Length: 288
Length: 342
Image 1: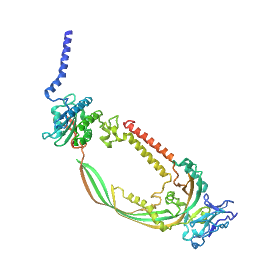
Image 2: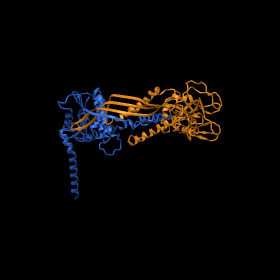
Image 3: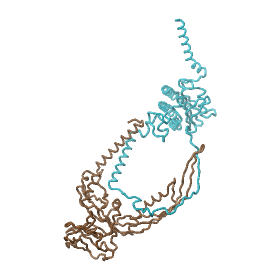
Image 4: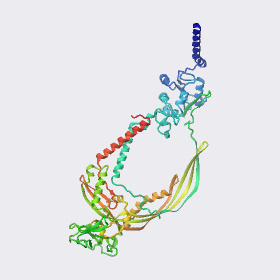
C-alpha cells in the first residue's frame, strides 16, 4: 500500500512539474524574445547608461505593479502605422510581466513620422485606459519634442507606475475612496492618482480663497453700513400706462453649421483597439 | 412777511405735532386742524427781496436766516416762524409730507440704529454724543416723466442637435422691434444745494399717500428751505435716474433669445408734470473722535442713511472670523472629497 502511495505521490509531482514546465517550455519554443528586456532603443536615442538605467527602473517598478513597462524607439516602421506596429509587436513577441501576452504598457515613438503611441494590455489596459494614456502622453510630449528622451521615458514609467496603483473609477456608481471632483472636469479630476494635485486641495489655494471670501463679505458689510438704495425700477413706474405698444419678431433667415461628434474613447484619433492576434488594448496617439 | 402761530386760547406759541398731524399748543394742549387753515400763498405775491431782514413776530428780535431758509425758530424766544415770502408765488410748494416721527422718536431710533452697526466702534454705538438733531423740510421736485422707446434689434436663437455622426448648430436670425411707452410718476429729486444727493436718494421711498396740500403751519417748529434749483435745471438728473430703469425694462421685453444686438434705440423722455414738494428729513449731527458725522433719517419711514465710522478692530475681527470659517469649511469639503485634511 505504501509503495503505491509513493508512486501516486511521485506521479502527482511529475504532473505538477510538467504543468509548471509546460508553459515555460512552450514559450521558450515560441521565441528568442527576452521578456525581461523592456527598452528597445532601435533609434539609438539613449546612451547605454541611460538605457540601462531605464531598464532597471522599468523592472523595479514593473515588479511592484506586475506590469512590463516597455519602451520602443523606431527610425522607421516598414511602412506600418505605429498602432499597427505596436499591435504586431505585442502579437509576435508576446511581452508581459510574468507570462506571454501578459500585463504590458508600451510606449512607442517613430522618429520618421514623429508619432508617439501609448498602449496598455491586460491589466494595463484596465488601469491605463485611454484617458490616462492621454494624460501621460500630454505630460511627456513636450520633453519628446525637445529631445529630452530620457526624461520623457522615465516620466512615462513613473507616471504609469503611479496610475497603476489606483484603480480607475469610471463606473458612475462605483464606490471609490478617492475623490470625484465633479464630472465636468472629466479625467483630470476623478481618474488620476494625482488628484492630490488638484488645486482645490492645496492649502494655499484654500487660504487665498478664504481671504477673498472674508474680504468680500467685510467690504459688503462696510458698504452697506451707510444705508442702501431701496427703490428699484418698479417703485416709480406707472404699471397701468407702461407697456409695449407694438412689437414684432420677424424671422429673417437661418444658418446651420455642423461639426463631427468627438469620439469618446479616443481624443487624438488613436485610442485603443484589438490586435490582429485578438488582444484588446487601450491607447493614446499623438505627434511630438 | 413772517407767519407765527399763536394759540387762540392762551396766547402761547404753537408748533406742528407729528403725532396728531395738527398744530398744537404746548401750554394748554389746544389742537388746531391744519387742513382747514385759511391761507392762499399761491395767489398772494410778494416782491422778491422785499425785505432782507425779518423780525420775529413774537419778540421782535432779528431772525438769523440764510437766503434759503423758509421756516425756522427764533433764536431768542424759540417760537416757530415761517417766512411766507419764501414760500409764495413760484416758490410755493404744492404738497408736503409732514413729519410723523418727532424729535424724541428720531433720537431713539438713531440710537437703536447705532447699536445695530456690525462694524461701528463701541464708543459710537452708545450714541451719546448726538450734537444736534434737526427736522428739516427738504425741497424736492417730483417729476412725472413719460418715455417713448423704440428699439430695433437683431436677435438670434441657437439650437443644437445631434444627427448621426454630426452635431448641428442651427442659428435663427430675427428682426425684432419694440415700441414701448413708459410712465414714471413722482420721481423725487432733491432741489437743495446743501443736501448730499447720494444721501437723499438713499432715503427713498417716501410714502406718497401721505402727501398733503401745502399749508404753512406744517412747518411750524421745523426748519424749511426753498429750492435752489428749478425743475428745468433738475430734469437731466431725473432723466438720469430713470435711464437705468428704462434699460432694464427694454431688456425685459427682449427675452427668449440667445443673443440680442440692439441696432437702433430711440428714447424720448418728456417731463409731463413736475411739482415742488417739501419732504421731511431728520438730520443728525454726531461727534465722534473729533470728527463730525452726518446722518439723515426719513421723517416718515424712519430709514437712516449716512456713513458711520468704521472700527478697524471690528473689521479685522470679522475678516479673520469669516476667513477662518471659510478655510475650515473648505478643509472639510476637501476632506470629504478625499483630498485629505492637510
